[in-house]
Image (cartoon, rainbow, N blue to C red; front, top):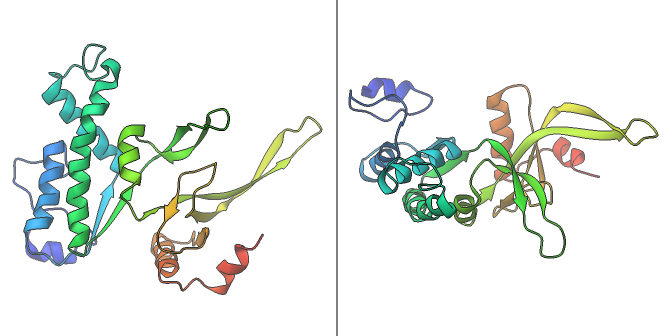
Length: 229
């Protein structure tokens, strides 16, 4: 990509060899792209990974290809969960590269598709909650290294609809971001954020501005009123 195009772009596509695809198609390309940011001089301040569960899949494919001759079956990657176990050190290597980027002053933002996670419960039955669509072993090492896990959804209220205690949902137009852990979702933050951040549904730019204001401690009075029980 020519310099003038990079300067005008709202996001950065790494300069690439003509033999490579526009998007990363292998784990090696992912590591190459991050190393490029670590070793080359640039003016970029934020790296967005879209999506981190997609990168996880590339990691699994790399391990399957290099350690199990491409065999995903019971005698290969999935045998006794061996593939997922072997993937963890490789994934940790990737996380360490991201940590080095952060040490250099870059913000690393990872997006993830929503999934349903099983939660072990020593005090009672296992239950499920919302979380990223990732394997539990790679997610376990990921969540311990990040400063914030933010869970975004539409604000939905359920009401009893009839004597049989069926429920009816209402709302679903107001965007909210959860910043603290609960039984229903994975979340955390080390930035002293409000438990819930209300973000605009008008445009992505305004939603981002609302999130940025929350990190800067500049939430407006309307958001604070909405957060009241």
